[in-house]
Amino acid sequence: MLELRHPLIISLYGAFQDAAHVYFLLELAEGGTLLQQLEQRDLNHFPEDWCLFYTAEVALAISHVHGNGFVYRDLKLENVLIAANGHVKLADFGLATRVTGRPETAL
Image (cartoon, rainbow, N blue to C red; front, side):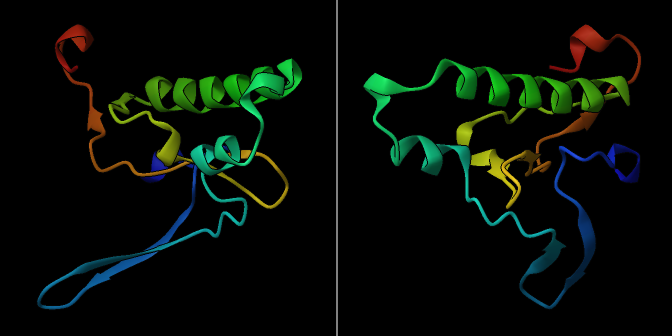
């Protein structure tokens, strides 16, 4: 999945395993998850520009994934990480699949 390198997608630096586990070395996203960000805010006073910003960044990340022949299949707030600079980092590609043949059958 190296072809998915993008500023809005979490970087995978390496992976290794022992007898019981697989470990991934990932880029640090210091802002936590988008779910955590939402839980820290007053949902009755949620800034529209904040919503538009994160919606647009997630859409750009998903567009890059789809444009490279993959279907993400696990979009949820817990998989949208926030970097220290405030930008999105899409994470957890465990359910992603490469689209072959007819794309509409890959879902």
